[in-house]
Amino acid sequence: MGGEPGPAGSAPLLIACALGIEQLALRSGGRDGAPGPFTVVRTGMGPAQARRAVSRALGREPWGDAAVIASGFCAGLAPGMHPGDLIVADETRGPDGTTPCTGTDLLVKALSRALPGKTIHTGPLTGSDHVVRGHERAELRATGAIAVDMESAATLRTALTAGPRPVAAVRVVVDAPEHELVRIGTVRGGISAFRVLRAVLPAFFEWHRSLLLPRR
Image (cartoon, rainbow, N blue to C red; front, top):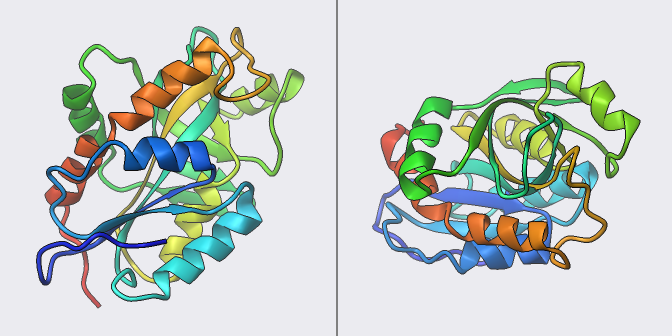
């Protein structure tokens, strides 16, 4: 992990992602406009690793009462989605239940300013313990979910278990019904998603500034 210094007494922001390429994209977005200390934590793939990494991170100073954003890539579920589209969850769904997200409208507006013209989808983000392909995508779509990934639901549920705080999930579509990818970063869709992920930090900082973080 490794936190960047910020103004004394300011509320911290913890951004969790699974993959090294996601962490690279997020870190290369710069820290201009950060209202306080923030860090980008690589959790590893899957819900179990996300739970362990987030719990461990929030157990360290100064991140104990940090706002938490789950970010990175995801698979879109709706026809017509394209690599590089943004997903802003209004809730995450996992085996432990549903977790409402904080300030979804704020995030959508901030992302629209940071990435003008970019398509943004809002709705439920569901969790899976494996990469979703083929018929599974249609089955998840039938539940009302708009996208799926392996870590967001576990990340947000773990964060709230550790204490009350703002939580959000913002993902970039790298894989969609008409654009299934085999490996991230080796085709055009992966490169497009990487570039979008590099540009989201200003919106995350704006969301963070706009929320009153409960202090324990």
